Image 1: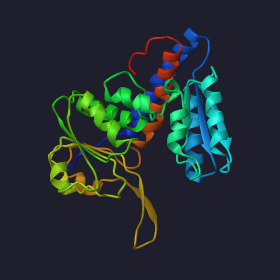
Image 2: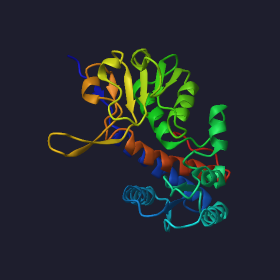
Image 3: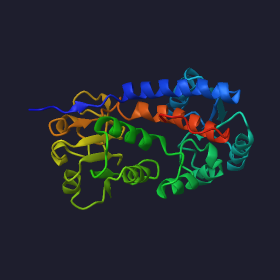
Length: 297
């Protein structure tokens, strides 16, 4: 039985960070300053805190300036919006990222809408979403951008391939579909309520699973030779020993007998997200400085 290839997202992400670091050095020489990334963290959520620390370390590692703004969970929405307005006007800062989720008393959509689209390195602002949907230059959400990079590295030209995206979120599913369309794929967006999901997935040359349900996509659903990008991160507890583990949205062990290649969880898409965030910050810095977009990004 042929076993499919495991796509090494960690290695690709490391290479992308190296490319960004080279671009940062060139930008600093041209602009007379380093690109700056501001991360806003509200509250003390342990997972978010770890993620923000990791972002900060990698931002500094590629030569950028890292700015962290921590605010208590009790902060009012108006005060948070005032902070974003200040960051929008701060010339040191090229990228603004507000760590999600936010407390229930704060409207996430209003916060995202307040970020200057030119500094929206998460790519969540409706202006960037609209630009992506209409084929214009945009800051693209980091996770789907990382997915398309891995797919092109694995498959080369994606033109004409049939792709199924399982998941319809604004953060992954919808922008993923737009990126695949831009590569001239034939794209279907499916989700947890899609009828006969298995047969739809089985058509696809490319499957991107981003539905948020542990191992929902079964191995037998996968067309032989398909390439699978598993975006899911789900914590499950084994009934026998009570230990928890992280799994994706695809039953990887089953899928390996069918796929050409598949991303692992963890170690596949996850490392790409932060690497693309750094890439987006460098691209935003060039645009704000009136410099052409760096090659290779």
